[in-house]
Image 1: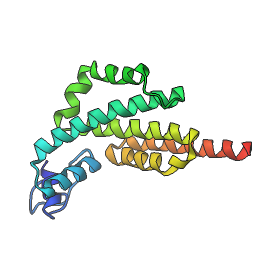
Image 2 (image 1 turned 180 degrees about the horizontal axis):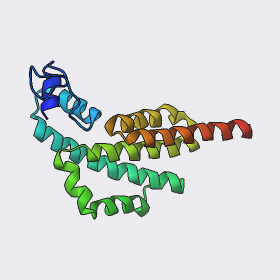
Image 3 (image 1 turned 135 degrees about the vertical axis):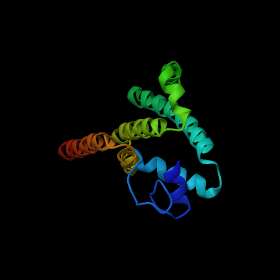
Image 4 (image 1 turned 45 degrees about the vertical axis):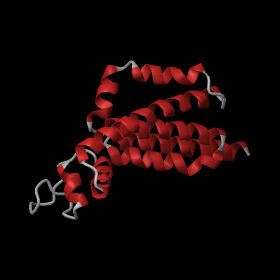
Length: 166
């Protein structure tokens, strides 16, 4: 929270005002989001919990979207509710998502990237959106770069397949 507060006030990425600029945070995108809500005037710890809960809900919608994409249907059926129920029954996820940490942002971006990537295979007009979500995954946690690279490689593979099929 200190980093978000100092970034919002123009002090840069510092743990202590006047101290050296150091990377003492685990999640660049989360710090940037929290600095924006701090700049707007919300209390950082409360905003972090609210954002975590919002991203938890987004996880449920994105997981349901993945199921709809896999089933290749636009109908909202009971099958879409299954991932939300599974996530809701996972105490670790439900407890930690609104804890104020970046976990729910990370999972939400990853699920959205996968959902949009699946939709782009079926409907190519969604092409840039999964790349943006994958970039968000890469900016969230260091290992997110691996997930973003896998999605990028899948895009290249899809493009090659589409090129040879034409």
